[in-house]
Length: 104
Image 1 (tube, one colour):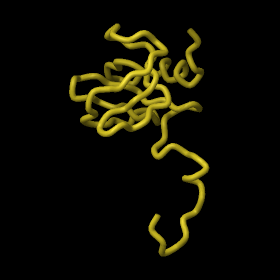
Image 2 (tube, one colour; image 1 turned 120 degrees about the vertical axis):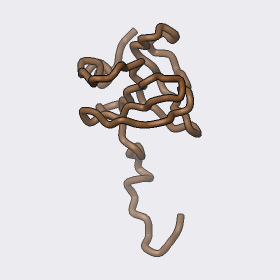
Image 3 (cartoon, one colour; image 1 turned 90 degrees about the vertical axis):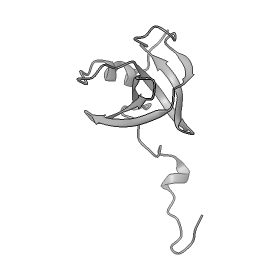
Image 4 (tube, one colour; image 1 turned 135 degrees about the vertical axis):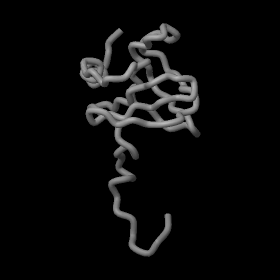
């Protein structure tokens, strides 16, 4: 199994809180996240597996990373392809300027 470079770099950081796992390229799905998990410390999921988290109840921002805290007590570091996850994710559509006075 190959761990993405951005996940490997995030895993070297001491966040000062108990981290359950690292969620790579997470996407919001209602009040949860879906993404590929790595280094699950509760040993529920194999690294590289696509998961959906429990309901996210809070967020922490530490060392430039968002940490999603779930209703079941898990803490996932959100990691993008190039480093810390950004919301909204950059895409061609989000880079386009919306016309003034128009609602899309």
